[in-house]
Amino acid sequence: MPAIGDVARLAGVSKATASRALSGRGHVAADTRRRVQLAASEIGYIASPDAASLVTGRTKNIGVVIPFVNRWFFGAVLDGIERTLLAAGYDLTLYNLPVSGPERSRVFEFFLARKRVDAVIVIGVDLTPGEIGGLERREKPVVCIGGSGEVTARLTIDDHGVGALATSHLLHLGHTRIAHLAGVGATSQPASVAGLRAAGFLETTDAAGLPLLADESSAGGPGAILVEADMGMPAGFAAGLQLLGHPAHRPTAVFAASDEMAFGVIRAAERLGLSMPRDLSVIGVDGHEHAELFDLTTIEQSPTEQGRLAVEVALRMLGGEGGGGGAPDPLPDSGAPMPTRLVVRGSTARPAVA
Image 1: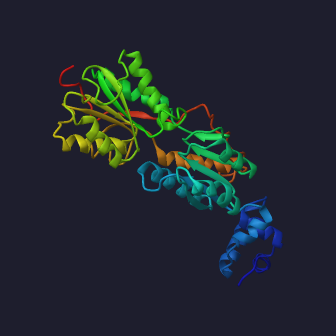
Image 2: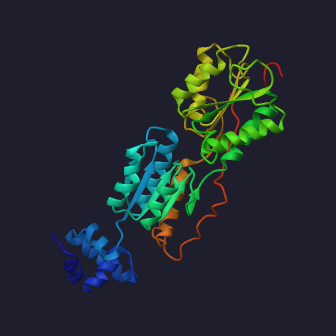
Image 3: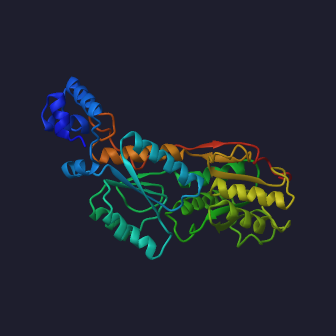
């Protein structure tokens, strides 16, 4: 098997120069770098990641912690992360994080401690102080996408503003009995994504003079209804059947905390024989790839772009690797949210009786 010394002899340079030329670390003249790369290619030399790790202290591996692998948003974020890591020459180790229990503890206390990663990207997880402390003790850069917890780098949209915008859209159309299908934990975890979106909904309906009704079975009339459910399509369908089942109590509009929940509500409305948007308006959040197929009004974000940017931030925190050379760009302002936009389609309209 060819060794770095063989490459160096063929290229007419020292082993140290050959190593720098192939690793991309340290200054090497462009002509010398090309000569070394040509020599390595000619004899079939492939650098050993393990050997490089011993020299540099880097594994070229990023740990990604994710709560769901079967939902569109998380899959889209993961796609952006993977593509960007591959382009930068990095590997990815994926940890599917349970909501709670000993399996979740093992991810932070055992697996992330045992596995050698250069940085950690956490997607949509509400981290506890203990989990954050454990990550910080490993002195690895941590970048979060969404979720909550006091970390150095977090990329997020303005979830409170998203809740307010979706609700305002329905109010401006003339709806006065509006339900919000919030994510589980919206009321008990106000700093979570579900909690912030619910807060935006409640503050906007309160400002419009709509009282918060006790539950979905409250007597008909103006008001705001909040129901918590899992943020997937099956839960949205089940909650939609419950919410829309009684003609005297049903809302004229539903703000779902995710597009997948909204898809479930739309299917529930169809099952009950309701016509959309004449009998019911529905708005979601995410910009799901199937939103146009469902003709769903949504507040669109770009999870793939969020994944790409999270990798760039992690690499900058590692010292600018993968950033194209030169001084690394400054980290994004943690107070500046990622962009979103309202996309109006046929699932929302004025109520039949304003």
